[in-house]
Length: 281
Image (tube, rainbow, N blue to C red):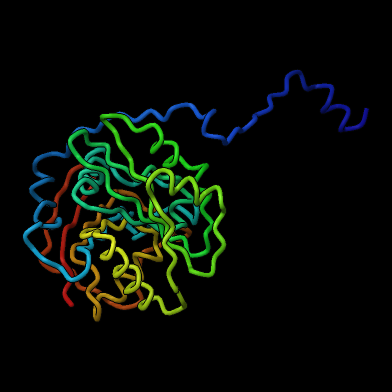
């Protein structure tokens, strides 16, 4: 008996997985409301969140992310990695509730398929803003698309604003679904000049009456904004969670090309650590 026949004769049962990516066949996403963060953590972060009484020419930007002890935000490119503990996970949703919009890059969306909503019962969900210059995101197959359609009284989600280059052809079905749910594709003249791109992006968000943006990543976005901070001051607040783990040199590193000095720092410690700061320009 040859090796193939031997393998075949030993097979008793074959399981075939069929993926149906049409929303009508999705099982409902189960989302439980979160408890609020500890009061000591709220006292730490609240002064660094948008204040309605403070006017800004462009949106108030809070850059926030979780990193390992060796400044990695993921174990490897494209790999979803848990770093935050339960207290700071709840903190993230609290921060979302205090902003008009939450911004992530396409790499984060493709790796994590995030829901981009707020899970605090009393909090509002921010408008997701996804930077997808090449139009890679198949929105109609995402968890966010499903979540917007199954909104409940307790947990809500908003359809995204998706930023693409103005020369990109958008999938017609995706564009219809985004529009049907109340979102939109935003076409901008993005170029290789990343600094100019950020001015275009924030100017456009301001035109859409978005006065505050929480930016969660990924690494390219974080490094971009930190590297431009010395001259442009896009970031108003920086809130970093530091988890008690080393992810190793294969991990996705956050490290801007030039030095950046956080100032007015406040620390909180629990199962992990949180640093809140502003940045000296």
